[in-house]
Image (tube, rainbow over all chains, first blue to last red; front, side, top):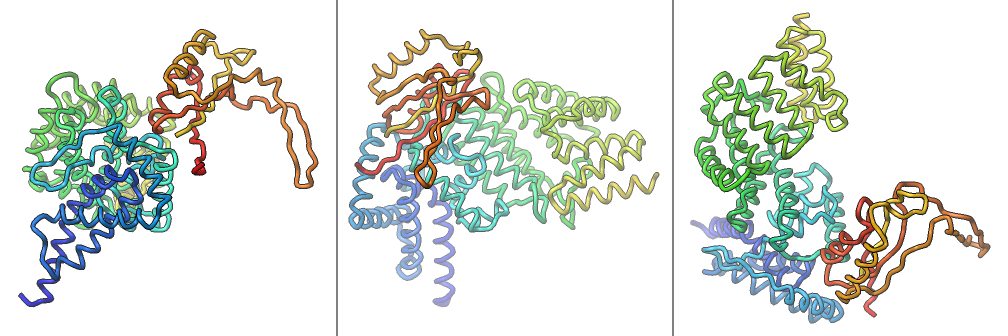
Length: 421
Length: 115
């Protein structure tokens, strides 16, 4: 190996370590200094120092510890230069110490794991909903601002402003870095899960842009759910969410065709599903469904598992899926759930039964701009031979679909029913 | 850290007093914040029909008008300043305030100029 290759190899391993350790390092520094800005600044500086030193001197035996020591030194330097800032942080630190959360330690790591409190801060309900996911990706997944901007399809400058605004709210309104107590957890945990699930769904079914799936974003979300799952063992809705994202993500390779176009469940090549991931999802699902009534993520995961276990669409247990949607509607009375239930009823009882249920949802304001609604109607209308109505519904879906592959798919479906007119 | 709680009670009745909370609720709440040692100050406001607005233009001329009057269902019925460690604590007090029930409480951190 020549010197340049060795340098590049070390650079790659530094990047990998950074990816893994970034959230741990940042969270530990937030815990130490009680200030997100300072923690981010010195985390970045420590990484830069590592990029400069490690390729020359080799990766130290304790990379996390090395980064933490370096970051803490930089922080102390910074606080020496800025006495007013230091005085303000000192006050914060006294209060943080009084609150005294117990840090968890992740086995095999050389940094204490303080990330749980950062999950709750980033998903705090006092932050704008659209900023919570961005902040979570920035602080916990360790994405750069430019990467977060790409994830949300906005210019980097716009994302930088949003992240700055969110951080100003955290420090200005003093949103605490702490894990909610057991009594508050039922109220606060769904907010964290919602943030992670919305990152996943944006990756799984992009709302806009050139491609239908954005697998890197979905994988980032799964990585974050896995971290939360480790940090909150025995929280059944965290189990439920992990099971759900695994059982859905397992179908990724079959969900798009060679041209990036969507492939619906009935046409997917099921041999291309990720069966080890399905097995893992089913194992986690068992935990989510054990020990009491299931939460909404566990129920959704159970529905995903029934699809994953079926040999084909005809051999799918639609009766059981409808029953699970009934349970889900009881937990989450949303028109989107009702729409999915109607589609399952159509599979169990025929398209006319499904269409009747869909028509009951007409006019719901939450479905007005939701293209899966006219798409589901169009599909059932086509199956009933009502081609003119189907064409109209496909046109309505086409006007609302956000990604080009979906629009191309809908144009083809529309052309097919129009040809038959 | 100090937070201002702007209590925007639901104006159910003519008198601007919400039907959902009683004078006893307010007395109990005031006792709680006082005994917890977090209350800096706080007042209930008189009926909105008694409100008057004064504006001063760039030339220093002042204009006095009647009102404002409620535009929505919720109107500012009182305020409370609490001194608590963080936003979560302020939100807890806001949620326990009788005016929050079927109404809203806006929580604003008080600016700290390092004094």
